[in-house]
Image 1 (cartoon, rainbow, N blue to C red):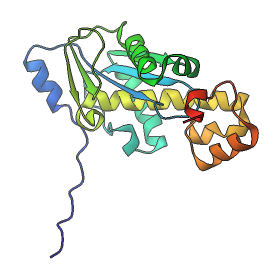
Image 2 (cartoon, rainbow, N blue to C red):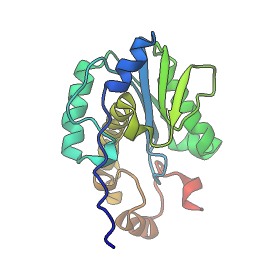
Image 3 (spheres, one colour):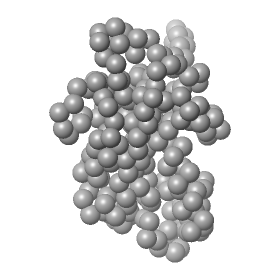
Length: 201
């Protein structure tokens, strides 16, 4: 017996936002991070509030780099609020990944007015009304928007860093442990932007 073909997963829509607004929530913010598993560079967290649907918004991993750049620019133009939080490679090494990640989230969320927070399986470390879900960037429209903004912003930063440390090819790998990146690491060793604690795992 042939297995039925799985149906394509629909992209997040704004319908859930409309339902939440009907319950009285006005400032609905999505938050997501990128860079958690990279060998170099910071973690970036983005918090985004959008009031209207933007065509093409989806989990950042599901769309191409060109699509992310285009959609990110529209999000930046139309978002009600956007905030960023960062944790550097030095903070990751000093504090550990989980505490540094919490710091990046707090830095992104503190300046934002929030009635309800939507997250990709993240629980805020301080009291804040929120809804979390595994794969929230595939379910919640504002979280998908935040995933795109965070990805584009961090990739842009890593391209700037690549000009300072060109051997590691960060303009192509964004600091992640690709075979090419690891090959250069084996040959040259780490630079000041590498996470030393990750290299010894």
